[in-house]
Image 1 (cartoon, helix red, strand yellow):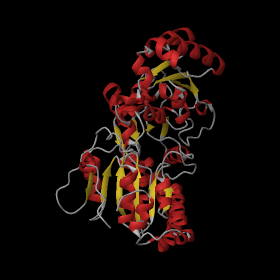
Image 2: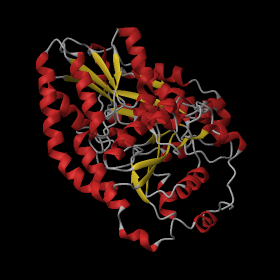
Image 3: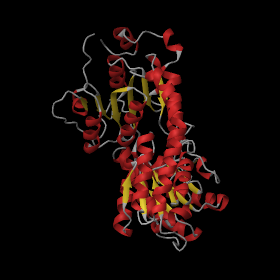
Image 4: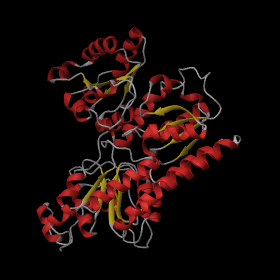
Length: 461
């Protein structure tokens, strides 16, 4: 096969581990025309704030922005479902010429009395940044008249990358923190940051902590409630799961309220156990917490480990590729795949930083391709070259895998089943086994026929 040439502007964002010094470029804007798998700034802010279930979420912009992000996470709520409604000011050509501030105010004054939310988030989109609407001023006015927090989210899509959207969401949420009473918050309490309750995962994690004897004050933002976020400053520790999206908020809370934070992951046996042990170690003055944690981990591992070993027999030595949003999730997935006897030959993320990729390089085997902000052609090239059996990604990567006759596991926020925690590890193993060993792939073009497969995908060979 003729070597497929990577765009010159992209070459520094791709590295194949070869034992030499590691250097990869990251934290850059996507290359124009490369069809990046990243989302925009607005989308980044939307996925962070969206799971707050009793808040109103109003997109100030054209209807397409609201449609694109409607129900964007599989984030479940045990109560209010207001977050699942998609509201938009539906800016038109006339609004672009004359401004959309009056339309925004009318929308808020109609929606807030009708739905009675605890707070409202107003997302500024690209067109709003171009025409210069003063979203913050409108929010202040409506907040004064309605008596609830109306918070602008400065998330104009052209401002940067998806990571900038995370930061905008954290800045908006921080305005709520510190406005509620902390009288009922106990001494052994935490906030969970960056857990979005995909398929009910936050409920699993909260149950673990409750069994340990640790109080969960607020989950930001899975199955989130505005009143819980208001009193989150009373917690004694912040536990950050999705570090790319929520570290900024944890840092601000540490500076403002003196709350320390730790980074954890709830994916895979090793990492979820460590997450629970790290929290127990923080509250070492109460020894019963660590005792309960050890008993919990022992019982959960004994329950699922024999089932994992059965699945491992069929998965051993198979090759996996993964492309996810945050690099911290990639670390856990590599460990989880090793527990299933699988080798990771391609690992990439949309928002990783230099430290993330340096750690990723240490974890990966020689020959593994590490990529930042990949595009479909690059992903297609490497999954064929590396003879991949399984691709782990999100909804945008699914068609790439299926076109090449490769098993696929959705580990992004559109999924409907929990993959976090001990039960989630078992769900993950079952899904990986079902797709990687499916007999359907015998009817697709053989993966070893690289020239034919790449040609069909439009990649010159």
